[in-house]
Image 1 (cartoon, rainbow, N blue to C red):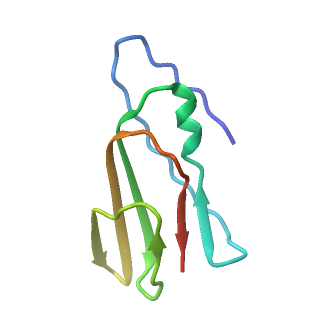
Image 2: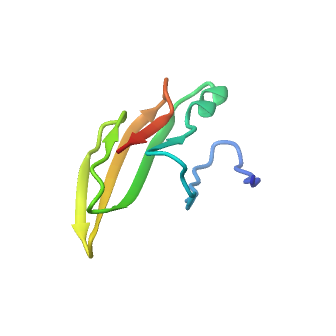
Length: 92
């Protein structure tokens, strides 16, 4: 899957991606290091990972906060000047 988004020079824009995938093992990897090709950091990168409360995840990124409710936990990861060296990996 891909999409095109044209952003004019010296403008600010944003987009939201929803991603769902069946997994074959207890690990998930979201590729973020491709953003390094842009050769400058993203001003703000925000990830919301929603999991069943029965799952105890381990993240390689720092979790800023967790919001609970309805049998689910929402893990919020947020970075300013995001220029990742590693992809987002979640294990449980």
